[in-house]
Image 1 (cartoon, rainbow, N blue to C red):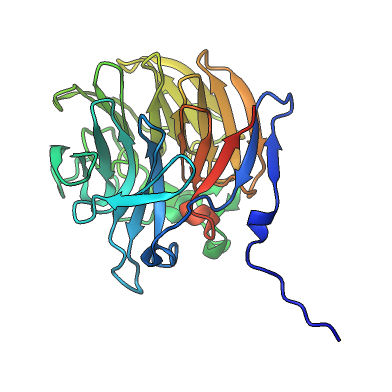
Image 2: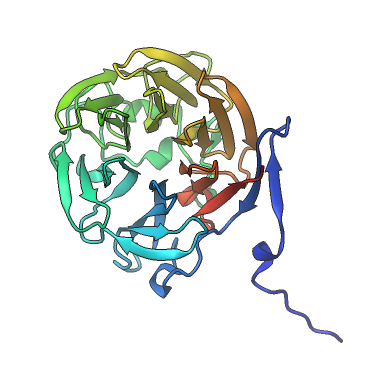
Length: 360
C-alpha cells in the first residue's frame, strides 16, 4: 500500500488567469498575495480581518487590519504595508486606530481613515505616528433617524439570496428588517462613515453609509462644505439615482468626478465635485462594495463576486466574475499599473488579500 499526502502549497503551484470576453482585460489571480507576514498576523482572519486597502505613489499596498477578536485582543488594529510584489515591509498606526473601515493615501503625504463605529475620521502621517487632523466629533453621531447599533450583516440581500458570507448561513435578513434599519432622513457628518478620497484640489469626500445616506465634502483645510444624497428605495426594479441605501465606498477619478458604490441598491452613482449627478448604473453588479481607479479606468468589486470596469466616459468596458465566485470583495485598490487588490473580509473568509495582476 502506498500512503501519500498532498502539500499545502497548491495555490502557489498553479496559474489561474481571468479574461474579459473581448480579451481587453486579462489578469493572473493570486488568492493569497501577502508574503513574509510576522507570526502574529498568521492567524488572520481568525484573530481579525483585512477591511480594505489603498496604494501610495510608489505602488506600495496598505492593508487595513481590524485586529483582535473574541479570542484575543491581539494583533492590534493597524495598517500592514506591502511592497508591489506583496512582501511585508512593516505596519503603522497601531494605537491610533479604532474600528477601521476604509482609507486613502493622499498626494500630500498623509493617510485619511474613517473610524466607522466612532463616527469620525482621522488624517495621519505616512509613518502612522502623528494625527494631522480629525473630521467630525468622535462618538457623536449625527441625527439621521437610523438605528446605527444594528448589525448590517442582517440586511445583505441580493435578488432574494441572503448573505454571500457562507458562515452566516441562509438567515441573512428580510425586507422588513431592512425597513427598520433604513435612514429616515439625510443628515450631516457623521453617522457610521464608510470611505474617503481626495480630489486634485485637495478637497475631501466621504461616504457616510452605515448610519446615514450621504456624501460629505470638506475643503483642503478640513472645513465642512456640503452634503448630498438622500434615502433610496429598496426595490431592484426602481432606480433612485442620487439617493442611497448604503453608500459603502467611493473614489475620485482624474476628472474629479466622484464614484459611489451603493451596496444594498446594487448600484453605482457618479457625481461632479458639487454633487451634480452625471451617471448611474444598477443591477447585476453583485452588490458593489469597493471602488478605485488607476487613472484610466474605474474598477468596482461586488461582495457577490463581480468585477465591473468602467472608462472615464462612464461606459462599462469589462465584466468579470460570477455570483459567489473567487472575486468576492469588501473593498478594492488599484495601482498605477492596473493591478487590482481585493479585500474580501468576511465575504471570502479564508483569503484576505487577493491580487489580480494585469497581463498585457
